Length: 464
Ligand SMILES: [Ca+2]
Image 1: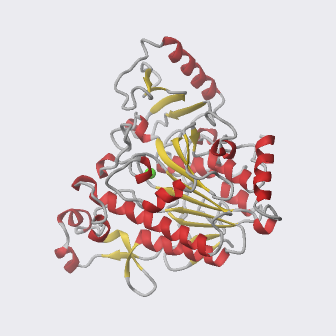
Image 2: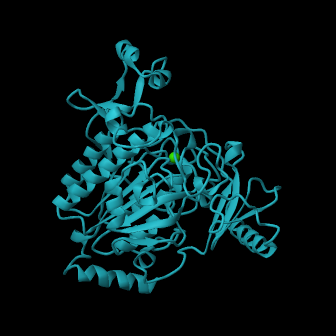
């Protein structure tokens, strides 16, 4: 740990005098996509969805090939991300929407706000209790939600059947079109991208932390316009999703451009990741792995996600890293890059020495899953452990363990538990030891409130 901080400080000093001083602390942009699959970006091998800007981000940074969400899906994933620890540490063993995040330890946003950062959030939240909106847990600015477009009867008449099925009946509020200040109908992801540019433009002189989590590319993507879909060669079953992904890529392009223009590219850490694996019902792909959101939640594809770190001044360019990491490492890594001590509550480690290659191997020798909240959907129950090339899992505590060698069998078609009893025993024991350190499942308190207090409108809501 000490060595890695020294290494980083040396790297920062090499950038120029005073680079680590309060005024020039590195900026951080964290982009967290909803349901983006492992196999759905150009740089991760998809042939039918062009993502040139995200590919460039990877070419100018480190592409992580074994990056995990230990607390899938949306809500628990985001809670673990913002707290920098396994969700189970605060009793979150599954979806449990409405369960508060702890207030006795700082969220990533609070931590950075307390250390001289201006902090901003754009897009989907889905964290904590009804009283814990972004402004309540440490963000200083939150992008207000532009009003949704409402479809008229005339527009419904002209809709393609798939869109009409979703938005032509009782539901007339669009999911992915909003109305901007000038009264124009705009694609929400595009609008978000402009808000990112606005935030960076206003705060270019300060160290900033910007967290963008678009509603995209979560279902339903049927509204994706032909102008986006036509840029892909995706087959029919994933054409709308592909269009939505192309739009996310456009916003990454806007981000890179504004960082370049302001001279901030070298001194800004950009992290790009996803909150859980691909949604098969939208045509999402986990290739070369199987499974994902929906019916595939026992398999690798539900929890393995694309992740890219890019900071040309500090991290190598175009280096792949295949060691195991988790989304709770983002907190620790950001803290370290900012020259700050990682808070004690964090489960994550500073990934910088792993990303640079100074340190080899997995950032975590073991990672664990314990989705067992009684109120969660049955299909999402999962007990699992990862170690080296092995993946051990079962759905319920009474089930037999299944074991897969992901290197030889990425699709998890051959359960090799019977041939490798010592590996099963080792991983099961490690899982048990880890589970013993956890508090029990927490109850979701009944509570009145509306954490969307930033409200609908234009511009930014600010913390009181
Ligand atoms: Ca999600």
